[in-house]
Amino acid sequence: MFLFLFFSPSGDADGKLDEKTNVPDKEAPSSFSPEHTAESSYRFRCPGPGVFQCSLTGLVFVMAQEAELLYRTVQWDEGLLQPAGKKAAGPLFNIKSSEDAAVRQLHLPHCETKHALVFDGLLSVVHITDDGMTILEPLEITDTHVVVKVPNLSLFGLVWDFIRRFWDISLPIKSKVLLFLRPPHVRHQILDVFLLQKNIPFHEVARDQQSANYIRISSECDQDICVGKRYHVHCEPEGFHIQPKGKQFDTSYGPDFYPTFEVFLTPNTETVTLTVQDEERNAVWERLVSLEGTRAEIQQRNVPAVDRVPTEDRVPTEDRVSADQKLFSVRTQFVDRVSDSVLNQLLDKLLEHGVITDAEIESIRTKHRADKARDVIDTVRRKGSEACSVLISALREEDEWLYTALNFS
Image (tube, rainbow, N blue to C red; front, side, top):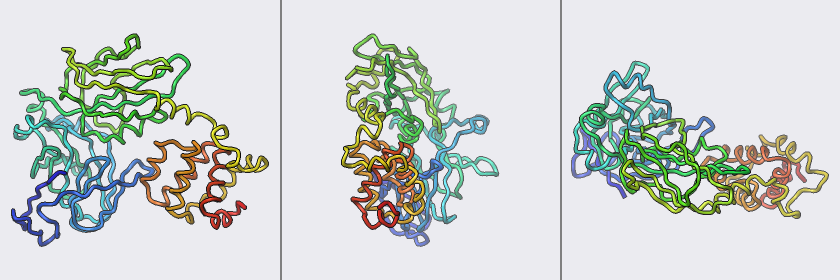
C-alpha cells in the first residue's frame, strides 16, 4: 500500500481536513477500474471528496467533490517541448471533468529509480491549453508519482529536463517487457516483444494489437535500462529469426505503439527462453515463455462458432440464416431492457461455448450496463449467424421474459 502526502494552505501536518474541500492531508488512494468508452477514453464518476487511483493508467486524482472524470492519452508535440528544453517522460493525458474545480491535485506515475530522484529539477509537469504551455513545478515527488496542483483541466504530461537527463548525466529508468503472440501462419508465428518504460499503461499497448494474444508473464525488468543504449533479444532454442538484431532504446509514449523486436517461431513451438540483453550481454529481463495455452486460445477463436457449439445449444436449422438479422432488429430493445446480472450470465455462456475470448470478456465487463449490452450484441453479431443463435439460446435460459418480449419465441 502506498501512502501519499498532500500539502494544503488550509491543512496541517497532523492530517486535519482541508476546510474548503474536506479532503484529508494524508490519505491512501482508493483504486478504481474505469469504464472504456468508444472513443478510447477512460470514464469514472468519483463519489465525493477523496483520493482515487486509476487501476489501468496509474493516475491519481485528489477530488474536492463528486464529479465524473473523462480522460485519454493523446499525441505529444515534441516541437512544443524542445524550445523549453523538455522531453516527454510519460503519457500526455487529456483530462476533463463534469465539474470545473473538482480535481484539486493530480499524481502522474513516473519510471525513475531512487537514485535519479535526488537530482532537483529532473521532473516537472506541463499543462497545455489553448493559450500555450505552462511548466508546473511538483508539490512532491514520491517513489512512484509526481504530484502537482491542478489550475484547470486540459492536457497534462510528465516531462524531463533534457540537460539534466541526457546531457550532464545518464540515468537508468525502470522498464518492463510485454509479449504478444500473433495468429499462426503456415510456416511461422510471430512473437512481438515490447521493451517499454514502466509508466506506460498496459491497455494503451494492448489496444493496438488486434488479433494478437497477450502472454501473461511477469513483465518488470530485473535490471534498469538506459535511454540511448542498445539492446537485443536472445531466444532458446536457437535458430529462430529475430529482427532487428539490435535496437537503441528510445522513449515513446504513444498513443501508437509498435514492437521493439519480432521473433519468428515455428507454429509447433511450445516453450522458449527469452532474454533481453544489453550491449555487454547482461540480461535485463529473462523468462521461460509458454506458448501452448496462448496458441490454443488463438486457434479456438478462429474456429467457426458452429463447430464449437453443442447441438442442443443451437437454434433450429430453419432459423439459422436469420439469427443475426433477428438480433439486429431488436438491438435497441435489448440494450434498453437487459439487466447487468443477465449480461454477466450471458457473457459466461458465450465464453463457455467459445463464442467470445477471455480478452473480449475482460474488456466488456469493465463497462457500464448499456455500453456492455451494446458490446455483447455487436461482438456476437460480427461473428456470424451461428454465434447469434448461441446468444439467443442463452437469453432464453437466463431471462425468459425478455426472450419472449423480444419476440424470439
